[in-house]
Length: 519
Image 1: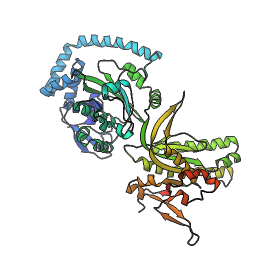
Image 2 (image 1 turned 90 degrees about the vertical axis):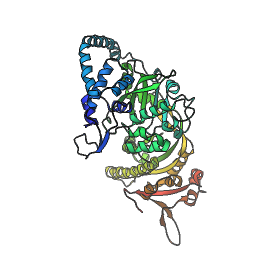
Image 3 (image 1 turned 180 degrees about the vertical axis):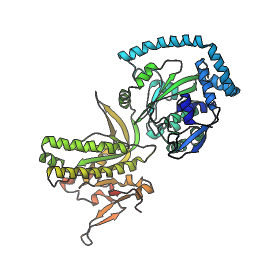
Image 4 (image 1 turned 120 degrees about the vertical axis):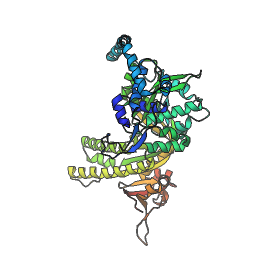
């Protein structure tokens, strides 16, 4: 038996190509075995193993492809012939064709000089706007976030993508009547996308997505080898076969570019050279900037975190301008890695406050991410406050007042010449902002809607409740309860006027989060 890692190392193929050979029947489905974390096979916890003749079969594929055979022809020929004998035969044929192959290689090398020279001189003008090949982007929930016209016509066939993010999940979307794909093409495309996603998403979250949208597609996922060998690969390439309008199979080179925001997928005919396309895809910063600016508006579930620096006006008056800006920049710089840790997205900075959005994720609960992020921000702010108390020898407490809410709103983006800003339209943000105004002394307040949608296990890790005031019995914190805002404040006072908008909102204070269950 030979491991998938050894097979990849010895033949030079990618893991995506290996999975493609399995789907085409060139290689059998591997036997998956568990390994110790310290195993020599790269530290993988599980690894696939193939029959001993698999190395010869892959070598046979490489030789046949070098002679101009299509993958369909390769698969058909290998299905009828013993791989080991065929390798010996093909090697003999290759010796006879050596001189002609050398001439072809010299011709190809000459042809390559033109695009390479153009790349070095910066004359290439390929962009998302000029890209004629089908291209689309999906996030790590398998939801379509962008596509060009070629992808709409040639890959999906629908008039327009659905408005709701949940309906844009490609596992379920491809089986909808408005998507003009035959059943075999649907399965082939889902298999391709699962294969590409497996470089970044573990088996368990992918299985959860497939079972949620179409459990009958689980055999496609089970054919994929998960060994973690492509985690650092920025661009993945795999061959993909799809029927054209005449019912003939067409071979595409499919490129996948991985970003924090999702996967850009481009289908390029295998007969075309890919130098210019690969050069364009290699300009990651430009590509993702363009993708984000073209992101389709979508109705999506989300959690919103609004944080505001308490008494910012007084602090601004107390500090010299340079120190005040230094403080604000320190707060924002501290927030950024915490935001990334919990997969949050920057919203618009409002004065001394910030807005963060949390969207559904494949491997974690976005609602709990928002709560955990708020708690970690509070802890980080306490450290900053202590630093500045020592630095300034003052007693001022620097505190972030945080409001959390959830809802379903339209997500889009605003673009200037050098900046892209995500924007969410709707009442969820307004109510989270008001809740941040309501919070005092660095507290975190969340709506009942958000806390109620957490799992039982997640909720059991959070200490939350409401401080009940009583003249007879004194103040008492009642855990795991909620209260309407109007019962906690005298909203008739002018200073609370802007909180009247959330007077009926049921809220609770989050005291702390534990790594284990609290009850």
